[in-house]
Length: 116
Image (cartoon, rainbow, N blue to C red):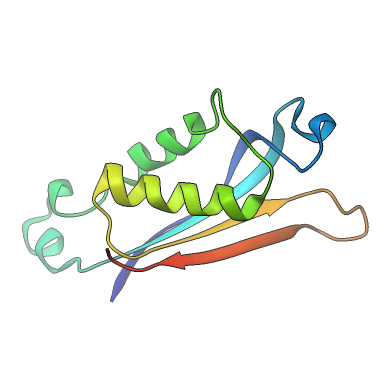
């Protein structure tokens, strides 16, 4: 299967267990992988036959507006569902990186949602 990847998109969302942690948006890195057969897109050289990664990136940048999450697990699942619903993607993998443990480069959650 072919894949489109958006790797380490910098977003600012309100996420955290405590109210203080959710009080202001914090920097996260979001990676998305969408499985898709590119055969038609390649043969026709046509964007309509694939996914517009720029449009998906722009949607992810706005995704956190007026929202908050306690868990990055829930956030990752919500991102996957949004991409499946709004962009008609089948299998979607999402990774969310958070920078809250000073001794670690990051903590992350990764999940895959199969075609519905």
